[in-house]
Image 1: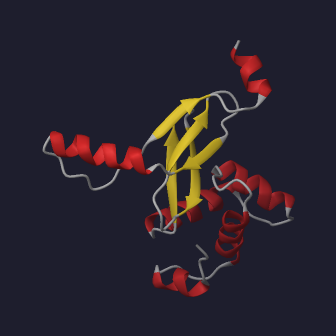
Image 2: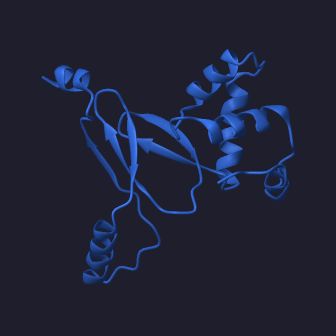
Length: 143
């Protein structure tokens, strides 16, 4: 989902260079999930003069405005991704931290079924599966 300057204004945020640069970075990132530290390092590598505190502040503002989602996985690392229109779940590698997005209709249906069995109405959910990715180094490290 491409976020425009108009979207930032609608969210009550001024158009500032750090906000625009962070937004561009998140939108164009090969890996859709980035920690604040990774955003900061990428901006420094691009020659941007921005502080880590500014990155945290902007990401928090984006989260409050619904522009990004924060995920807190078991590795005690918060990562951010642009808010998606379509729901998806995540798989996280225990060794390298690789994050894979997926959507499975059967899982979605089963969650609704379980909720209904317990008289529960879902307003949302977060499913994270942990394990090893297909990287041989991760499998070697796990041995």
